[in-house]
Image (cartoon, rainbow, N blue to C red; front, side):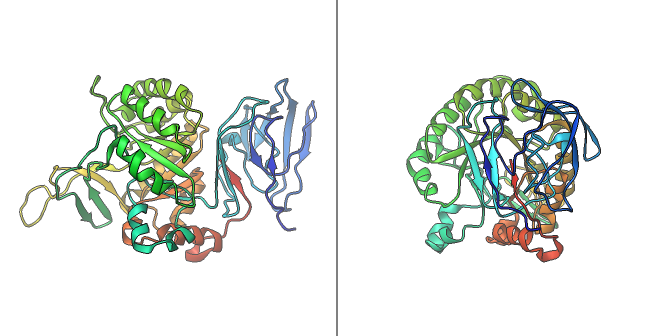
Amino acid sequence: MPIPPPTRIAPAASGLTCFGVEKELPRGPVTQTLSPVPSSQSRSVPAAGVDDGGLRVVAGKHRGEEVGDVALVACVAVRRRCWRRCGRCVPIAASLASWQWSRRWPAGSEPVSAIELQHPVINASGTYDAIAARKVFGDALLEDFPFSAFVSKTITPEPRAGNEPQRIWETPAGMINSIGLPNKGLEGFLAEDLPRLAELPVPLIVSVMATNRELFSQLVSEVAERDEVAAIELNVSCPNVHSGLIVGEQPSETMALMEALRPLTEKPLIVKLTPNVANPEAVAVVAEEGGADAVSLINTLKASALDPATKQPALAAGHGGLSGPAVRPIALQQLRAVRAAVELPLIGMGGISSGGDAIEFLDVGASLVAVGTESFRDPRAGSRIAKELQTGVSGVTPRVGAVDL
């Protein structure tokens, strides 16, 4: 039986937006078999009915796990998990057909922001210069852009020149970078870079970072006002100048930041987690409680290297951040831990260089994957990995159906 095409379901009844075939569940302890579903995917879902707010309340088990949460259990006709991840579902039916990303909205309300993606592969911030690539490849880049959404390099309130060279050092399984976030600052970005990035054929996610909540608020307010921007990523790996603490390493700092930023915009806010902390899941939990729409992980790991010729630090700054295949096992472990702690959509990254790598992240619980270091070696890596997910190249089992975020 062919899988039916995605159908957008209005969120009025459930408060969630999904793709799939919706089937109302009557009150009372009944068992519903959801359809139309390919025979290999059909299963029974014990339902406890519908609560007064119109949300389907699931009681019983889903994929063998206890479920005691409000969940949309009917959105499995063209995908095999619900947005809320009943029982911490992991995605097992990813597709290039239609990835829908929408916030959780109260029952009866209409979502005002959503990001529709053609496939689950995006770029990691700062690893792909779309403006420079456009100068080299011209409009051909727009006709076959390698990512389904573009994440800008991180912008700060004021311009930054970045660190002194040497800023990159290759390792046996990746690289250490100490670039230092060079950028034109908020004003320069809005005036010069944003109009160019707005010409890309995919949604734009702008990455921002500041040293205190006031400056973060300025960034988010001014960036969110621009219609060209679909979402904002919060780079929380910088110290707070008031407390001296790394925002992304302290749950209390992360919560305070979210309390300041969440009221400023209804556009999706993505918190990018640092791996340089014992329990990243604790930070993810407070990000979720503070109103984040998604979290992305992992950022680079603290690292250093020696120049064998001089016996001195290989990087001018003395240290940097490790990325590439070497960090992939760490990224998977942290992604698994965060997936068990929160229900937010996760953007997984860290050493992804093939469709097989991407599948591991999706199977652990990521909704999207981001390609970073591999793009330095292969500027078409995003397209290649997306194709491998679709066609089964490189030992990847093809994924069919559609998933929403």
